Amino acid sequence: MKTSEINFKVTVDENHLPIKIEWSAPDSGEQSECKSVMISLWDAKENNTLRIDLWTKEMTVDEMKKFFHQNIMTLTDTYVRATNDNTTADAVRTFFAQVGKDIGVLK
Image (tube, rainbow, N blue to C red; front, side):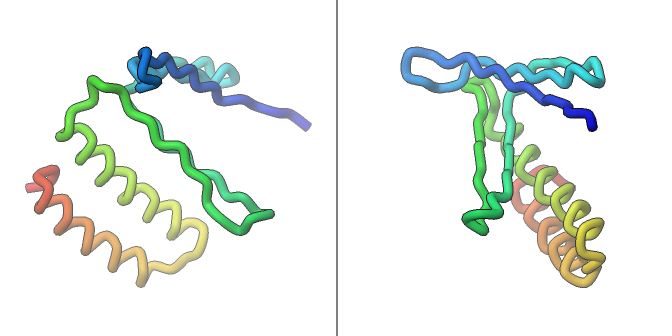
């Protein structure tokens, strides 16, 4: 059996606000810097989702809007792969297509 790691390194300022976020995936040879990270974990013991949401001070509101919209859309793809529930996924996509227009990330 093999294990794999994904690592995050967060540099914070004196107020503990992120100023730099770096990530690496050694097995794939990938590493980079990013402005935001959202991590969701399923805690089976608590039957609950745990989340870590971080973004740097340099991330603009417009970037956050796009990041948020893209996350919901890709979560919907994941939902379909896990459940085959296209009816719900279509409803989410339709709703978030309008949200994307409303927040200015889609035309």
